[in-house]
Length: 193
Image (cartoon, rainbow, N blue to C red; front, side):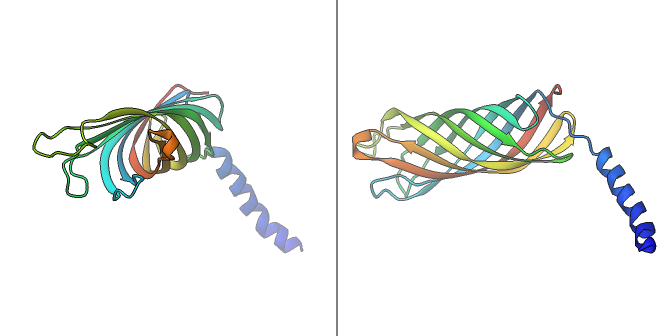
């Protein structure tokens, strides 16, 4: 028994010292710039398509675990299923983010709510009543991601994966669009808590 205590005491002490050296710095504000790839799944039998874009998000950290997020972004798809629609979507979403901060890794989950401005271009050579429209819709996003802290001022975001739901007009017809968004980028960190 004494031999076990003698062997494991230094190991336990070194683990405690190593853990104490990992300080978690919580910034006051984090601002991310991200590329996004969205798989758009429109309702009413239209075929799914891909859209590329980007978004920026700003998080104010209330404490180590809880933050308030504003997420603004857009995506674009020129040709949709072989047709020249020129679809553009701009989302403005707000809500809480829960962080699980460690020294270098910060996994998080979030639930965001807001709106979407959707529009598509009009091509005079292509007659289709669905083109040339714009509308504002309710939008929501549920998901999470991972930030890798490089230093006190910079982090890398290897991935963020979100379900993005949009309630399209007319709402009475039950048009809900269920999209999947992957994004990656960099995060600038300001101040500390």
